[in-house]
Length: 415
Image (tube, rainbow, N blue to C red; front, side, top):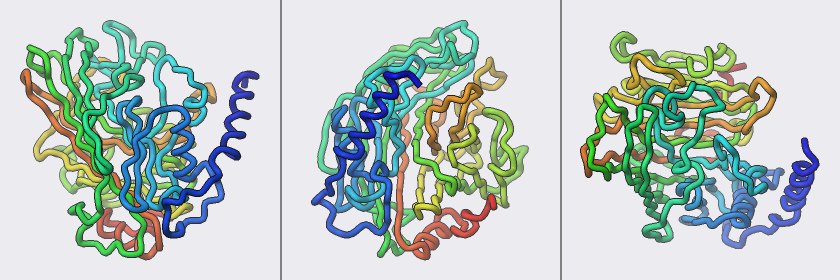
C-alpha cells in the first residue's frame, strides 16, 4: 500500500472515531440490535456521505433511506431503527474518501442502483465496437457511473429523478433515451405480500422504485440492432453467516430453463451453492467471486437473504412480466443467443487472481425484459426492497410465509 493510501486510511479512521459518535435525537425507541462497530450504524453512514456529496433522506418514523442524486439517484443505505440502527447498504468508504475517479468503474456502493444492460456481447454498452471482451476494454458508461440525475420533484417520502442521454452499442446502434426513476419509502402494510403478516414487534424499512426507460429518438429499437434492459443492483455487507435464498417455480427444464445458472465466472462448488427442491441457496460471505442467475420463467417474484449473525432478513420483491422470455445476455463474448439472459441474479464478491478485491460485498439483482421500443415508447421496471430486524421467531414467520423456508434451514444449509 502506498504512503498516500496509508495516510488516507489513517485519516479515514480518525474520522470514523471522532466525526460520527453523536447519537441522533430523531430515534425514539431503543435499537433491538447491539452494534459494536460504529461504521455499521446508519448514523455513521449518513454523516460520512453528507461530508462528501449531496444526499436526500426519505423517512417514516424510525425508518429511513439515504439517496445520492450525483450517483444516479441510487439508494446508498437504509435503516429500520433510526440513526442507531444497522446501515443495510454496502458503502465504499475508501473510494469515496479518496475523491478520485477510477478507470473502469466507480463502485461507490449502494443497496439499489440503476444500470442498463447488456454488459457483454455484440449489443454490449460496456465495450467499444470491435474490441476484445477483456477487462482492459471494459468500461462502465458514465451515464450509469459518474453522471448525476436531475431531481424533478421531491417530498419527505418520495423523489423523482430524470436523465436524458445517448448510448452507442458494440454493433454501432445509437440509443437516444430518457431515464425516469422514482424512489419512495412505503409502509409495509401497503406491500401486498406483507399485508397479511403480523409485523408487530419487528423493525422494518421498505421502499419501492419505479424505473422507466423511454425511447426519445426517431428510430425503433429492434432485436437485430440490439436492445437495452433496465438492470437493478443492490450491494450489501456480507458476513460468514449470510445466505441468499431464491424460491423458483417448478417445471420442465427443457421448457422453462434450469433452476439456476452458475456459469458466469465458472461453476460454483456445492459448499457455496445448493439447490434443495425449489429453493436456491447461495453463500454470500464476500470471500469467493461467483454469480448465479434465475431464468425469467423460473422467477417466483421474490428473492432474499438472511444474516443470522446480525439477525437481519432482507427481501426483494420484483414481478416478472408473464410470458416474457427475451432478456439481454451479458456474457463477455459474441453470443449465439443474445436474448437468453436471466431475470434475477446474485453476486458474491471475492479476491481476483492478483489478490485485489473491490469489496467485499454481495449483490441482489433484477432485470427488465429487453426493451423493444418504438419512438416515444417506454418500459417500466419496479421493485420493492424490505429489511427486517427483531425477534427471530417473528422473522421466522415472515421467512416461511414469503420465502417458503424457515430461518434454521437457511442458517444451517452450508454447515
